[in-house]
Length: 196
Image 1 (spheres, rainbow, N blue to C red):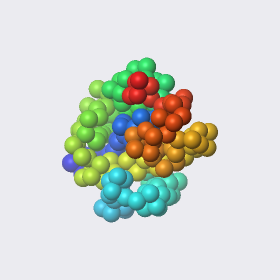
Image 2 (image 1 turned 45 degrees about the vertical axis):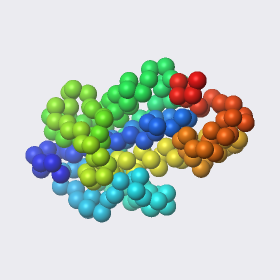
Image 3 (image 1 turned 30 degrees about the vertical axis):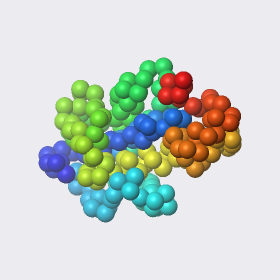
């Protein structure tokens, strides 16, 4: 993993929810010990897994977290904040928060981020990898955690706003979603800066 043997920790960072027209942005930072390789070779990008397969992987990751083999931190940026500060600033804030919650020693950590993301400057060993969620296993793990947790949040939101079908499209701009907006207008979890 990109010369990771020189570091005590390797951290994967990925986001989910950059493109939807509703719901929060989610960023996960996931840390593994440099010697950890138990499941990394089997992992795939969360976007290429079915929802059921993602849930199975999520269960494995949670079991490993309970053992102390991996640790992760999530940062959600609300619709209100996204509309207020914009996507670029929201991504920077979410990455910074997630990494901060892991309490990493920057000098001993290699931070690998999916394309378009960057870590705060104190993380002097960082690398942004285009399509990293497809090629770097620890980023793929972070991607799965972020995707499962955001999808669950959108399923919960669907119970509060049942007219929009959030449990199906998860806030993305599908034909069904736009049709429902045409019928019912926008609701509080729609990103006004994306729609108005």
